[in-house]
Length: 400
Image 1 (cartoon, rainbow, N blue to C red):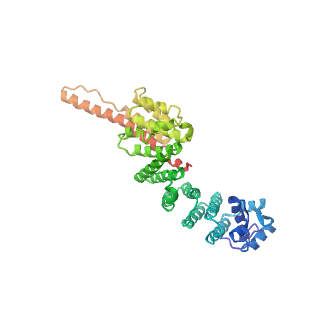
Image 2 (cartoon, rainbow, N blue to C red):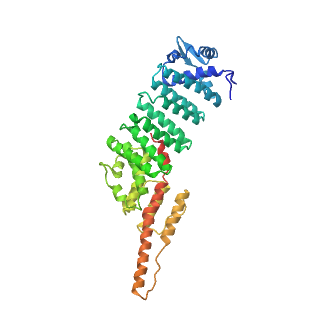
């Protein structure tokens, strides 16, 4: 671990702290008054050293970081970065506790520190800085937009590191600790609940996820914003479809709720993100396949060039009797496996048997009816659900 002495660049740790502090100040404000946070005297020697080395330029009573100063920030080692910005966090926290800066200034500064650390592959340290900052401002009335930004930054850092359980816990804690913000009816509060639901679903907690999605959807209906509704309806209806027994809930999912249904959402597609339009179209097609509306389902995904949609189209042709099998050359392993399954299922046929007795003929006819019924159920309900599960739900964690 580096000492408090000289760095390999002949710049002391204290000098890096002075330059780093100015860097953070430049990111959050046009003011470079170091005495505004009560550290001018404390870092006086370090500031003078930075000025002498050309890392900081002084204009009257203000200081600005130079081009060379920016190069130092960008090139210092990860260990020195950690040490320097731990010190800078302490400076800001001390200023906050002394009432020299507003909590908004403090939280903005720490989020900038987190951004810098994560850019240097120090995501764990970035998460720790944000966690400490969020704990430190709980007692203040703070701007909710800053809370949303800071919490989301922490959650997404954890998600990017595949630390889904920690991300879920962080988001769940935020909804409790900052309920004054997250109980508001706005897009940020709704998206936070959707992300919490996605994390619960990815962790196998489907019922908790369904509750989160339902909570988000209830708020989205009240907000009546089509973009927020698109994500909340998609995640809630998708999980409802996956959790229901076979396809027996599909008719309900196709009915309007609070004046909205999936079809109505698609009529506002020009206002929606392209990705969610594709997802909603595919979900609606799967619901329609499940209730036997093959023609309408086909039209919804006719321009979708994904393998998922292509397999659905070919399967619809099989269900309508227009073809005997689906293609066998697929890039994705899941889709390739499903195609083989569809073809295997479709090969199961009832043999023609000459029966001497009527009761035997009836018995065999019943068996054939059961076979055909189960073939249809597999093709129209079970396999489309697997395609729905193959939709890379985790990507929706990056919605804004």
